[in-house]
Image 1 (cartoon, rainbow, N blue to C red):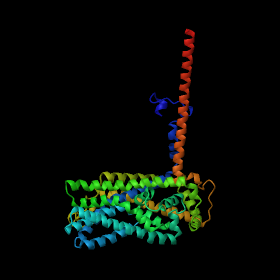
Image 2: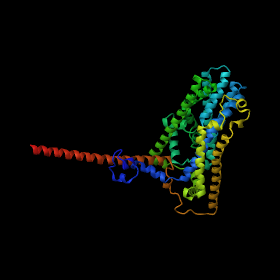
Image 3: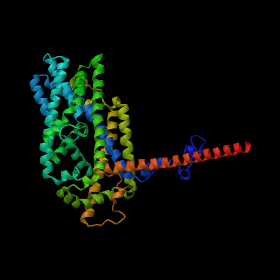
Image 4: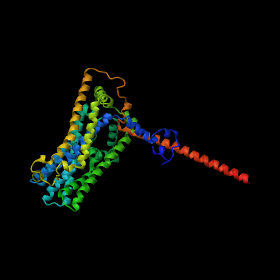
Length: 466
């Protein structure tokens, strides 16, 4: 836009570029934005806001209250009794699908370190005891998630295997990576960087060897060590080295956890693209295919009814309004959270800080205003989902057929898989590279032509002078 309408930047040498408002490289992105499904985008924005609120308030605020209460209860038990209780509780928390590993490691670091120091252990010894307990909890959780949930539940339910998309190219690429014995960078990245519950359950559904999964998960120690010591340092709540050490180690643990996650995405996409033909020719789970065929009409109707152009004006306004309200409430809560909730640390007590009532954690009136700003999108998502499910059931019961223009074609579901997304990105980059090469060749050709003409003129002038 600047190069076209001002004198700044390089001039546009291509006739095609002069017709466009933006550069050729930006056109695929602009076309994607214009053709995106706004109803789906706004619905996901609402869900992201709900998830963010649960993370800030549920994990960030309520977890401190729970850990404070747990610390008070466990001070009357010995170290071995505390280890047994925390191990059972940790494995139970790992059984919850949305529960990540970092809060569990931090909790164990807080509680076990305090119990160990009360029995005379040093800070370093208490921290290493916490690391050992965290490692034990993680290994037991992998066994439970793989064998009890994955193998048992996955083998009995076609619905579970369908939801996990066991017939997708990405899952089969992941299986190919995980079948490599011993340690490899892709395998360790998936086991360490992937979400705890889904990764272990998927290995059970795919019937991978438990021993190999435990061996590949051992490098999770690089995440457990800093987070456990961060919990031990945060418990002291002192100025000086411990005041700085806790947040620093926690930040290191978060970075170490996220790094293999992105590495895993890269290797899964790479395996899916490079072995696409081989993976596509593998035998599919027939029971899942039968289940998918039975629910195909339901998915098609759900897609059609949720399309932006098929939503009523009132529903569109509610989509936009709830997305704006939820996003605004979460951003305000993130910046001015202390206006809505009482500041509460793990080292505080409910009796002293909250007067013995957990409800005092919410400040009046801002706390209730923020809760309403996030609670309204939650209620709307629930009601919208129920209404849309009823509409789908009604059309299926009445045998209403989809018109040809309503049936979603596969190419309209852009980037429906990681392999397709990666292939599309590569094609876009190749097209951009070809365009640059054409411009470079044209520019270089013109320069070479000018040089050749200049040389011919100089030669002719020399001949004339001679």
